[in-house]
Image (cartoon, rainbow, N blue to C red; front, top):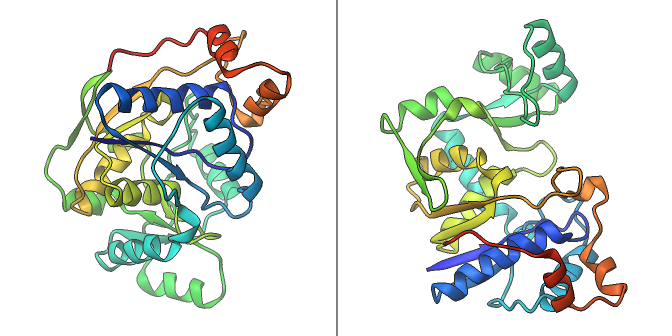
Length: 282
């Protein structure tokens, strides 16, 4: 059994990250499993080396240990691009020239109202472009990403796929939740969905412990696992840590960092006692 904690170094870790890391680490200890740390640093614009170093400092402060070497996604970009090329050769990816503004305009014109706290599903604007149109626009220098052609993908898969969550039980995939997701971003040549699926298979992860906010992403990851003939791990999507207003902790909201807590002279034991973390029965 192998599990992992896979943060992105786009900012400082906060107590929500601590909870997720401890949940995975405790699962590993409870089941005598291997525990890995993966640094998901594909976003070259937002990820910074100092945040990667601080992640390891914070985890050591919490009392966690992990196997070496640490996998850093930025060192494997060519491997993700190779897998993306394989999917493209199978007709499963198509170029999308839409900006976020283009997508928003199209959704508003169609009267679509995104559900609260859920990303809008891409309306398929570029899915119907002919090969010649695609080639002409690429030749003209238009920037584009590559999206999963969900309709084509489902034609190559069994009629029904599922995955098991130790907390929520057996789940049938609902591909319509995220639609034609981006698998190759125009700026970095890959994406979270593609990289995390490839790395979980590469590292032979058997149990993925992560937050409930990534629950819906698992539907996409299960599709990619089937398309790429990857093994299917078990999942444990744990509850999220929230603030006094009931909002989940997030870097973008300025949640207090573990570094700040540590620099206030609070020990890890004091922090954990005060946080009062309780973990699901794994």
